[in-house]
Length: 368
Image (cartoon, rainbow, N blue to C red; front, side):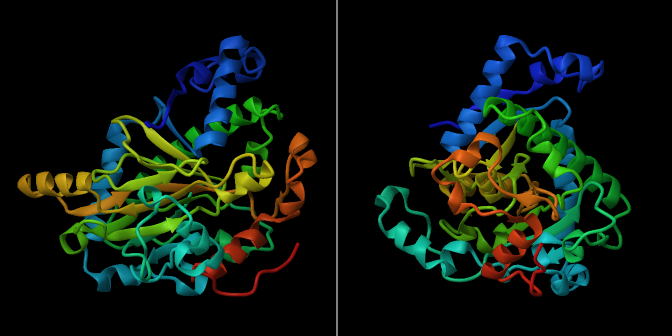
């Protein structure tokens, strides 16, 4: 199965996001766009993943970002560790998380381990034996609240020395990917029969993070080596630009395993745990892993022949619900039989509880 591709251009044009009077035009979607919104919500519900084309996010933007991050990850470990902030929960905050720190959920979650054993063998993920073999750099995107109970989740960014283009490149690519997610969030809300801003209003001043990962294929480029063990994302929606090395496997809601092929010019969006909460399980957080596959080996061979970098870089961005906003089933989802499994809590409290499981938490969360 191929992950469906949605062209966002028709929605962008009608809603004035490419210029024009958005307030006037947004209420005139018409039956074709309304049907497209229903399609977006259905794909997210059934597959947990969606490929989109957004003319505001160009191939050149993605390449500029990947070029810079390859140069960064190629620097010695001693240099990269200067941007380490373990006191600030590593991943969901700022700076770099070295390889060998983040623990995949499937390594520590006993319920998940039992579930994996019941999967058909051809759908089972690679079995992790330790922490992930990836570096990750966390960069905050967008404004943060001046008053919040979760200050560690809204910390100031860290900029490495010797990269004068760093801030502009990170901010530009991060803002463009956030804009793409906001459009998908609007379309999904409409498709689910919720107000257009049901999701995006909760995203305002959220701790969104551009979080590129780097894995050294010159060291770990062997078949089935695991860079990110089987897990789900704890945030709202995750978006990825196209990597130069394949290796991402996702699991559909029906349990089928799919190796994702991201076409040139497309972005991949995946459902996280926060949208699962807001929809009372209608959208399940998408399970995925990043491993060395046969297609990865082919890409390694080609890159070596062309004398290109052998660091696999993902341009991943985690969009979040605002830390002080309340996570709970929205609208008609509150009437779902499963709603009681998703009790109301601050998004920031939920994030810190999740971090504790995967070895990235620093202190006890504050309650709402």
